[in-house]
Length: 259
Length: 372
Image (cartoon, rainbow over all chains, first blue to last red; front, side, top):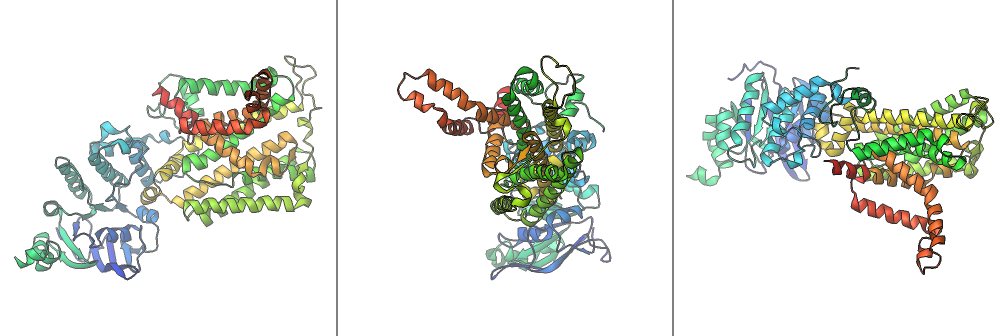
């Protein structure tokens, strides 16, 4: 699965760093993500995984370093401009439009992708194609029967699925999942994993996945990078990385390394 | 424009022939039988006011209702749909009024002056709305509100200081184009006992411009753009992450809202043949607008119709009603002084507090809830 090194990375960070006062949350992370690859980002709590995502998708401004999408420097762009350039992000804490319907949540993502937001004098439901597209996405995440329910009334698992649906509807080139299965019941997890696998196989998508569950990482990832105290400490093939001493120490704890 | 078949989410029932209505109302039907009936009654009542009531006060009240429906609806677009709390709305209302007043006073009582005054006022409002939007919609909501308050106060001071142009505290009285003057007769004979004079033409000018502007605002809140505004209200952070430039959308919402308020101000001035700080610029009007939006129901558009209707009627007739009640209860202790006309603001306040507690979604919210 490893693409040739000469291929243009879909996403690249160069020396990406953010400091909060004296604390370095993300420390000089340089990494390339190639199309068609699913990269899992692992590391203990507080390692800077979500902060790294925030720097990439623009919710946080980097202290230094650069973010490049297909070679273009996007470090100074707003989150919306980054989204327009193909960076799609699903959030760790569910982050939806709580009082609009489930369908409308997805339709808004479809509408953004279709660049149809600046139409003031047409009625929204005149764009039948956008509604149908949103319905297809709901079908994919198996939420069709909940289309008229507001997300605030959905179960946690369904909210997580809707979060994924919004990301799918954006049709990004780079998919960023931040613990998509967190807090889900055991029987709901396979649906989401299947969706992520499906995303990877459908297009030549670049997928970044922050995940804690090692079995999930093993089954999905083509590559693993490990963050520890904000720094990138390991990068490579899943089996190798998981076996490496640095990961045993950083991620699985000192005892594992000793034992 | 392609119009899809009636969409189940937005409308109840799929009556044939309803598609023209659905188009006019932008697929956003009242969704409550009682609400539909009330809105129809208001529409017909306002349309027929000159023929239903004699005298000038009912007509003036109806005209004021028309103006305030537009003003409150435009504020609802900002507050109810986008979640922006602005205190500068009367500033745009005032700009519309002054645009008409200054142009008609300086350039003479012609339709050309009306057009010049309106266009100049719309331009000024748009520029100010863009400036306020771009400068301050990035900051936190509370600071934005403070900035609008400061700008609005500055404009009010400016209007009263530049007395050579604005007439200062006295305001400006002016002549209307011939066709709108009371002495003008369109038809030699009265129709249904009502003479078709300039005053009547002025009323219908207000009525139709207000109706069209309201329908336009209803369209805008139900457009793809309006849907983005609601998304921003719900979760600004996520709207941005989906690729919507929140600042740009908010600024556009401010501009649309400001333009509609300007039109309302122009209508008010045309009706009163006068514009001054007290009729369009005063802060108490700002508070009235807030009350009307909240009582009617935020984020519903139709709420502005009901809110404006109730509030203006109460302003005009509550005192009369109370004075009648007070006289009738003359023998009873305490009660007559409690409902003395001077206490009308107290009762209005009480009504407001009760309505906010009882119907947090406003009257429209309550009626729609009852339907479900």
